Amino acid sequence: MSATGDLLVQIIDLAKRKGLKQKDLAERAGLSPESISRAKKTGDMHLSSLVELARVVGLKLCLSPEAPVLDRINQGSLFK
Image (tube, rainbow, N blue to C red; front, side, top):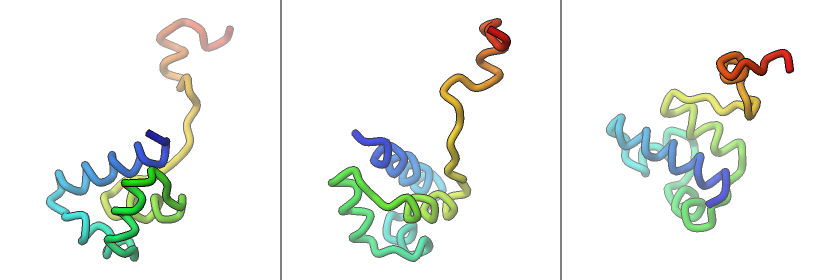
């Protein structure tokens, strides 16, 4: 699955745990339910749509380093 598809699945799963149906999630994000269905099938969605869906469930999309600082500290490789 694509990165976009993975993010979408995580957002939808969190919405379900919060009691939101996919239709309600879409509407609160200003999207049509069909756009989410299409994105699930294709694994592709505009970043702006993912940002809005994440916002609805209380998430924020952001980029982070592959090896976060804490991981590097724990591995003893921060200054290597």
